[in-house]
Picture 1: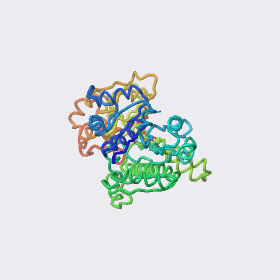
Picture 2: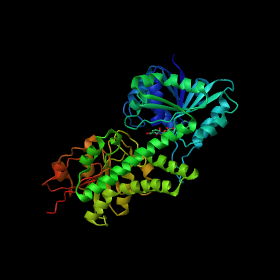
Picture 3: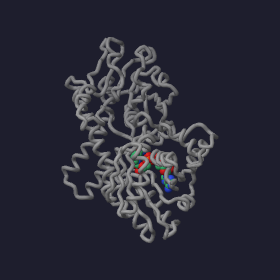
Picture 4: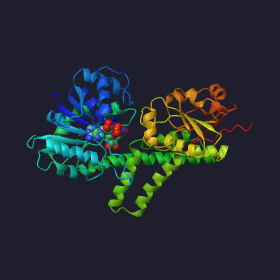
Amino acid sequence: MPGNYAVIGMGFVGLSQAIALAKSGHNVIGVENDTQKLRWLENYAQGKRDDFPLYEKDLDVETREQFRARRLTFTNNLEHAVNNSEAMFIAVGTPSLGNGKAKLSIVYQVANNTAGILNKNQPYLWVTKSTVPPGTAEIIRDFFKDHNVGVVSNPEFMAEGTALKDTMYPDRVVVGAQEDWVITAMRQLYSSFLARSAGHFRAMDNVSAEITKYQANVQLAANIVMANIGANLARVVGGDWEKIRLGVGDDIRQSRFNKCSLGFGGSCFPKDVRQYRHTLEQAGASPLDLAVIDAMIAQNKEQKLVMNHYMTDYYGHDLTEKVIGIWGLTFKAGTSDTRESSALAIIKDLIRHGAEVKVYDPKATREEFEETLGLEDTSPITYCDTKEEAIKDTHALIIPTEWSEFSNPGIQTLQDLMTNPVIFDGRDILDIELFRNTEASYFSVGRQPLINTT
Ligand SMILES: NC(=O)c1ccc[n+]([C@@H]2O[C@H](COP(=O)([O-])OP(=O)(O)OC[C@H]3O[C@@H](n4cnc5c(N)ncnc54)[C@H](O)[C@@H]3O)[C@@H](O)[C@H]2O)c1
């Protein structure tokens, strides 16, 4: 039987959840309080404009389809959403505060407002999909102490780039709750999802569910850090990380998140690792446990600038006469999200050394990028409409993002367009053989460089 659901926050997580529920036949009200974004979504859904506020595979097409099928509507009116739903999914942002703690004020504000609207006798489900630290469900429960509300911790494990697919076909659904009726209702709600994916339903208490999300991200982040340490070693002593990682990855226990890169970024791993550290500290963890997480954070910060270090080794520290091309501004391919991307650190460092940069990304918007960059003076940055334009008359190219359109640039194009074809491949996506016996020099993360000394 179709259910009536509200989803709060129309970002990557909320929109994917709303569409997945609508595609499963339910009636969904998407609540978004950014009025500009709300209008944009509505206009897109009604076919009045053709650009979408974020890039994520299939979200645009499916938004229009579910809207036209009258299963998905949008509003900024929380009262309308509460009064027309039996469960509410919370997918608002929980970004890092300066001290590493996640910002929870929006979650609590929505809980407070919902408690003020909700009929006290109406059975209702509050489902937290936002990533929140252990203990949050307990605080939320307090807002609803006079109500008949089941407070559910249902962390989201989808990845940007495959958000809708991951939501529609979850490998697991983690549900933390206190009451049996709540667990039963959630099991039923997700039964069609799990039947599609043959995924697991993991019922547990709220705190365990909250920790599961952080633990999952911190362990994946640790894999990335270890892969980058290995790739840096391979480069120095004569190995090839691409071959090493495949050898390591044949053991299925080791096969994920072992590509080398310029470190992890995005809206989840960095902030979740910081919040995890904060939680450990609050819980009185040993200095050694804290030191492990601190070392991960420090290594990851340093890794973002590996290509910059190779560049200053090559050109010296004064880059005032240099123009550098940048291919990719997002934290990974498949998304328009630039939050904590490697390109931010790379570009700031280049500008600090006096360089000018020409940047190109197939999906990131200039407006969002500049907001995440946070520089007052962006005059050294030129935004380009094509990847070719971004390397024209440049002294080097850095590739921070693994968009597939960057993987086969053509050596002749590089040589023809660039003043000096020096390539810094931050994702090891180019075939190194392309550069042998050419005018170009090629640096990557996990392989020895090919330096043209002529
Ligand atoms: N992005 C991911 O890959 C991912 C994956 C798993 C979990 N998460 C977690 O899910 C949560 C949401 O992440 P996201 O990337 O979708 O965030 P996002 O920033 O893309 O979207 C959040 C949306 O909520 C809206 N919003 C803020 N306050 C609101 C309010 N009071 N009422 C209605 N809407 C409001 C914002 O305008 C924004 O559109 C975070 O806690 C994040 O850590 C994210």
